[in-house]
Image (cartoon, rainbow, N blue to C red):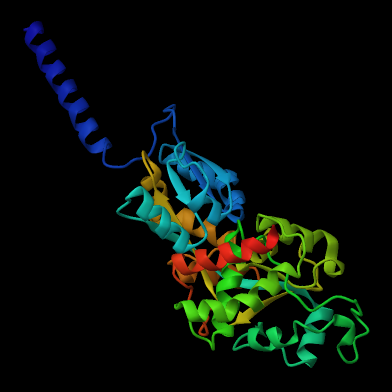
Length: 361
């Protein structure tokens, strides 16, 4: 009798274990003590702080992943970076991502983050450019920089602007960018100004390329030394003030991230302008192997990761999360950007960038 009870109890326990295995394997959350799988990625420097944030690390850890993230320029990622050690590439540019997708024969990519390009500046500069008709108020509580009028002003020195007592500097009105040979934000600037110089049409023919090349070369070469990462000129903007770079081309997310932190790095006289037209930088993740695709999937679907992305200034496919964050922090940014320029094809951008690079030698 005891033997029958023991056998029966063993059967019940075995069944319970089987049920637990079946129903406990429905999710991908890591079991306590389970070692997380390391997933290596490379992407734009503006996303490094997001991946390093302990809350982001914890969310990935809950799903059994430990993401290690290296920074590199988007163009470098698409052309010169050895992607062999990485499970995913995360450039800030859809054209660069398309190049990687084609080269690596990847079927699916993810675009979890978007960020409009913007210009970081200062109140005295805004006032000066407003007087010239270059800056004006947008549809909401933000201001826009008219790119066509800005381009018409680029041959003028700051000290030649009428009534300029706030910034009487003997250098040309010029937006500071990153190095066009390496960085996506500089490539976005190229795409934007070439669109305007081409009669507000995307550059798509050899004739259009030849037309816009001389003026865009001057816009880059006249800057002198440029940095390879988007964090470089933005950190200079924060630390050195308008004396070094009164106008800096950045991602909206960089400015909003610092505002949300509330660490005092964005001072009251610092302002953000939205170019008109503007460009939307689409941060696109390309899975290469292993769990790289899982990172893209989680960034695109996990509510907590989307909320944290909004805290870092990124726009996701949940616009309300972004708008709620702005309202909660009493910040202002356009909900919709109506006047958007078209980004040229990867091949067109590459030809223009390669031609510009010749002038750096």
